[in-house]
Image 1: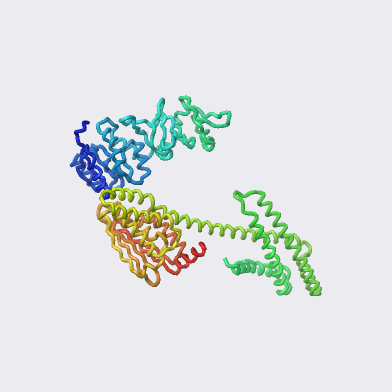
Image 2: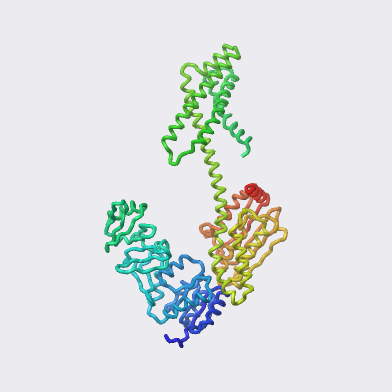
Length: 250
Length: 361
């Protein structure tokens, strides 16, 4: 995309001050032009269909219809950046679906930083947004996660993940030969995994039981889970008992 | 609990036992009623005095969780010691009474009762039974006291929970409003930040269970000012608060719970403007608070099953603070708005306030 092209944007938020603030901040962004505003979900759908904006700033918590509902109601959604205040679960879902979002409160600086990525991504191929939103906001376990690699978004089949490991604020998903970082708490991720397949074997580890070949007791007495690729993961004492049952069934 | 009440309890507990003993003596041995009554009182009085020792003993040996064999063995031994002591004590008393009265007839009657052939064993068994009764009551009493303490603790936790329910939902949206206002209207941004700070200060530090309506109303007004900024024209407020009502007492955060419910459940989910009416007046010394909205309302079934842990918690707090004297009435229906009326008896709330003051001194 050339710098000369101007991207049309729509602002959707039920709070008048939030709309006015965003409009004011976007006025400083030269490659964007604000073509309209909407104060609720129904108006948003109408505005998107008539104005055909390329980019929509979509508030999640709105009266009547949430931002996620709005997106689901569209057949050909534009590029969407969600905005949300406190919403732990929504944030985890956004991260797992590699969906762009801005966490309120945000000022001009954070908005501009977020927009840099959006601008870069606007022209890039990406996994369909509806699919990612559908997966991330579905009830029950997710079958695919989405990670950003460079400028593109790559889907990862959850079944192919050998184990998840908490690393600071991130979770590393270990897939054969590589690993991907997800910006989500291990406990939040655990809620979205199939408990029949994924088990928290340790404070910082979730193992995919499909990839566990054996549970072995080491000389030190510590139980470890051995994976297909030879990796050995520590098992907490509390989990050891329960897991022995699983091991027999394998 | 005042001491005299303990003695009354003891008297009420032991007198029926004495009556039962007297009746049994009469039936088993005949003789004059006065002798049977005298004997029964003597037995019960000694049992009760020794019972004090049993009570103290139970306080030293707390009920184990889970139950242990050692605990049962300790009490079995203690029960035997109690029964034996009681028996020996009564025999001694009986012989002393007999020698004082110098009455062969009376003395032999009492002695026959006390140490007559084969009477030792039933006395021991009776003593063990009395021990079990006293120890049982002692442990039950202890459990009741502990549960009262737990309840007081729960009440404090409840207040903390009430304070906590404010933060996340309000805080981030309000901060976003403040941030957006800064370039637009710095003065309003400053005022909003100050109001938000005042709300947080109260929410984080309020320790009182009961406050004056004027304090509560100040807090609610700040909250409404912030929410009005956020909602704009979608929030319409009508307030009718009598001056006379402002000095009345109200459980802390009670009005806040009702108003916040109206904002969250009536105004927030609706695109159209929502009118919230807040009223407070005095009626026969009580404080009557009403919060009504013209939102979507809720069916009776919805109110029963899910509607608002806030209201449920408030109802429990009212029950604890005022007993059945306070009431919380809900009038609603699908599409008919939501109206909550609180009747707050001032006598009970003053008592609760005095009790809390006593706690802090």
